[in-house]
Image 1 (spheres, one colour):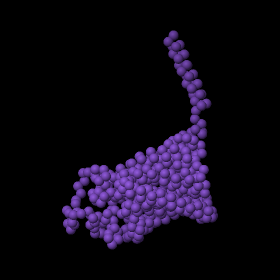
Image 2 (tube, helix red, strand yellow):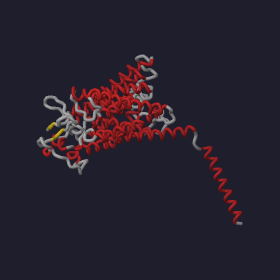
Image 3 (cartoon, one colour):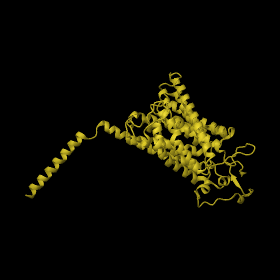
Image 4 (cartoon, helix red, strand yellow):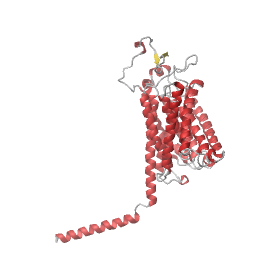
Length: 466
């Protein structure tokens, strides 16, 4: 009797399993749904890689600046993402990707809600939102480096929010939204050399210019004093993290792992970065007699920034040329802003992101395999790229100029001289990043009076400043 009951029970279970399997086969995954799942997963992973770039920016900026400001810099890089996330979600995303008639800014999708059919997405809107949020945070965090070591924390929070809220999204609408006027002209900026990097770079230019240089950076006679960062190791770690994150930044902009182009984009991205680092090293070796570490690190970043616009449009040779030229250009730009214009940019953000981002965008007009001047495409694409770069430059300079001026005359843009000398860690946050470090005062060093000491590189004499 028991055996008969067991046989009936087992037979029933097997029949249920078979019927469930048949139902799943009939109603289960299809090739189309699998593609959506794969593309969604890829977009999310790429977005997480771009988020990790926040750590890279934090390490680069911290390493290239002094230890007494390290906690302030970490706090800024944390909060520009946190504040920017809320601002972009509530307003910026709608301005950037909402539908529009004039091609200037979006009018729906605020708080990421509403009809998004005009975007033609093959992935869920929320996956697209998080991917675009990490890009918006990148544009805002670029500004931090150029204004490091003397900016009020409250001022930083305000301008980070405004950049994520409106300044960056308007540019994104022009170029990345199918309704945007530059998109309709045919401008190519695949992953954001202009949309992300030049917006951050030009905002950094205006911020650093209005803010003024760090104390002791320029002598009364106009002489440039070197203010070395406290950890080239942290700066190098930051560059490695950024290079790694860029494999999400550029290939991830396909929004599709089912697109075989992602491999080509990864290769052009990597080649440009390598070429930028190599040429920066060679240029400094010849120019200064020794290969400069900090300039070589910035050379790699310059190559990455420059190739971001055309990573899907140029071949490997074009990527190598663009990256190599950017590696030299960033050095010339750093020297120009430092010595000629005398705008103090501790990390070279203006040169890496503003100059090389614009340069890379223009180079698409020459090296794009489809439509580039050097490939028989004529001057149409090149002119379009130039118009786009110029329009974004004008928009960003004007809007951020107004923004920083308003901040300067309201809450204030710069900390006091005493706070700057003491360090923003203590002045702005009441703590030290390296609390257990014992630093020798200038008075304890033979031949020096008490005061703030600015060290120079090995082989040069240290100088005392205010």
